[in-house]
Image (cartoon, rainbow, N blue to C red; front, side):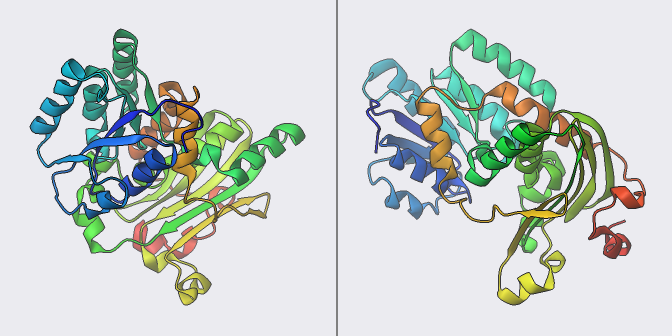
Length: 327
């Protein structure tokens, strides 16, 4: 469905990655064209589910040449948007590529690894006249939107007490890939936590204080004080951290947000969030550089903090059981 908007042409970088099919689906669901795709790996049969006609490249140089040729020679085939699903440390370079060929960039989170990279991109955005968008999909999740409305309408001025838990099972491959390299992924807080931190900052205001209580390649935990909330958080890619009832049920992911000891249910509704973000972008909305700044700054700070021993009121409920293995 195109909702009356003229069809736009998309290129996609990182076609072989886990998140790429959600971008492919969003392009198709909004009635637009996937013109070409790039990945250094060629196991990208998923493309056939969305386009038999998309050109595919395993070498960036040939992909670059093709995109530049379309910009110069073929107005109908010109690329309007570049969807970026590449490893985190390459996002910056691939955004620059998009702007250089006269396209807007739609980039997975984290937009960049370091907050100062945003300043350089802001200059390029202004010079090029193109836009840079970030996929901050929790901001369009119905349950999270309702939570924000609820907080804004009933804010008593008292800081909310929140416990965030996110455990997503990953095997040994994860820690041997770029995702396990903190220089390339930004580590656990950046790679799997940034969208939760963005959501919390979006709802409860700016950062006032941050602590890290444990940090290793598999898990991270700490405490945040925001303008309107105190947050105890725990992130893990270790299946062993799943609550027993979750493991028994066969589930591999556990998400929980306790707000003043009340569970905020948002486990469902994740499958089409990228389409909602794309539709917002295509109708003049979208989340830009400044929307991403607070969470990028936060995860950069967390990555560089030394762990401290938590006080009881700042410690996540799972942490005492993990101190011997993650301290």
